[in-house]
Length: 143
Image (cartoon, rainbow, N blue to C red; front, side, top):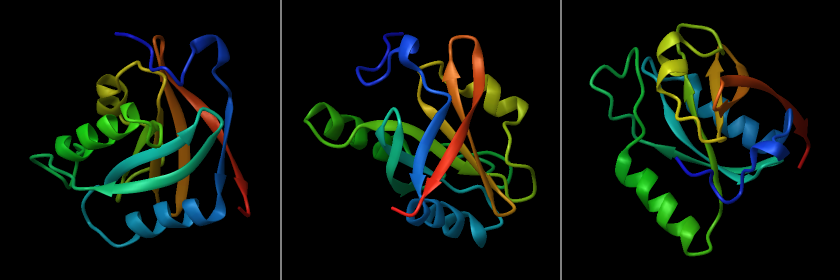
């Protein structure tokens, strides 16, 4: 699989910035539902600047997530046309921890993109690399 144009493994950072407003959006999206929620992350390799909620189309959304393929493909087409860079994905664990499950680790494409997991008021981040999911520190800023 080809490395996305905005990610180069030699440049992979161990931390990524996120504004308190974007962090609040993630927490709000995951707060109420009893099923897993999911969405897309936009920005640069060093900063998450926006999110987009997507439908969870998994057959069992209480225990799994699958981002709506039409939303994912639309974001990819927009990126290729000069729109915001798709830098990752997020989902929630409504009754679990903010860390990857075995299924998460197995299903994450090793493309260098971020994976954020929201659970119990906490958001944690990982980067999907050729060797697996590596934790990334979130640096929260006011803006």
